[in-house]
Image (cartoon, rainbow, N blue to C red; front, top):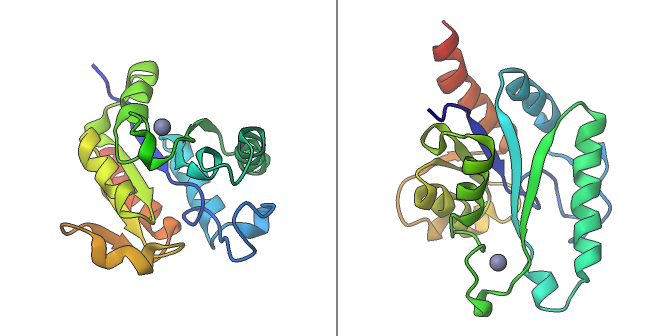
Length: 186
Ligand SMILES: [Zn+2]
């Protein structure tokens, strides 16, 4: 039986502010308030953490693949310095026009992670600032939590059905902790 719970986090605009520019260097100061603390808390509760990101800038030729991979590594290592383990970063570098199977909201990476790590997707969550993040959750049978950081406010009107909406990722993680983890442990 698959019982492990995971949180799949969108990367840019969900974990950290991009106001210094897309792909600007990320330090522990770049993360939205409370992100590090709530990730630590949810990890201590046994939740596995993943990042799922669409990086079509690569497919569009705006940045090199190696640059994107190094950027993703940097994010993981800044989090690792705070004791947070991102199991894997799943990155789709294709353009929309390529019609690949891994671009969000396609559930490809979540299914892959589910098999590899023994996850219960029905008990897992996706957090992101784009409609495709919460639609990804729907397509994988998980729960989508929408945040208003990054492009969240701009795209909120494009949500096609009601979703849980939070100011930022720390609020969404607190919600998971309170509803999912707390009730299980009492
Ligand atoms: Zn892809």
